[in-house]
Amino acid sequence: MKATGKLTCKMHYKKILSENLLVLKTVFNKRLKENGP
Image (cartoon, rainbow, N blue to C red; front, side, top):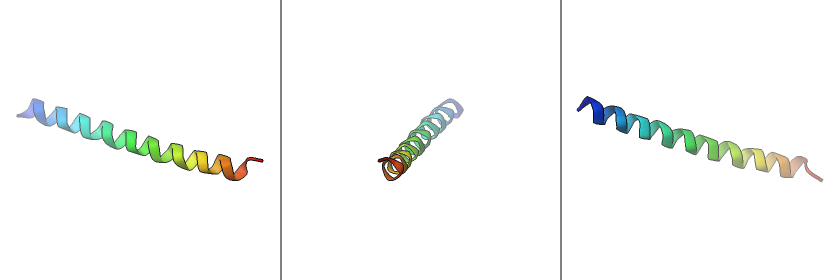
């Protein structure tokens, strides 16, 4: 039980991390477009 719990926790963490990166990328791109020529 503990092993599977750790695995799901890791996957959940990776999912949250990738989602945050995606949001950061979109925000960064928006700012670049706004500040761009």
